Image (cartoon, rainbow, N blue to C red; front, side, top):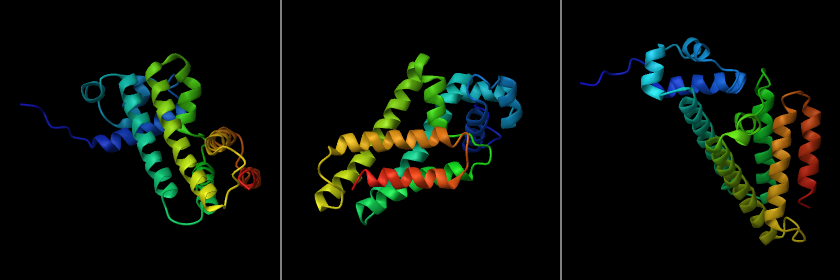
Length: 193
């Protein structure tokens, strides 16, 4: 008979996200995880296998939650430029609320692990494509309504603006000056005129 777990797996996964996000994959030891998750080493291994498996599950959970937020905004009714502004403000708002200035967990994973971890690289690429597609949908809607200029390819604009968001996520690791991000948002939206 299988033993029931005496902990909430979702809660533990959220704690793992926080630890990996703050310390990075390589900076996180198994002891950090045992201490931070509040479960025994044997429970950690029995439930998640190893550190890498737990990291992948944490990254997948983060990716899923982020995608839900982006898609909810991208698919909301209203003018395309206002929707796009909300997407940019979502990225900035979450980053500026973080007092530890961790940046974006996905971007951190991309920089730290994607070059030498095929599983992380695949997940980052899937995430990037999903966000780019959401941006494309909003831009295309705006072009079709005449709200966004048609002189630029919608896919190219989606890639440009998503790359700008990635830059915002890195910049937030070193500054919390709202005016810096307001300027970036303003110029990014001007690219859609």
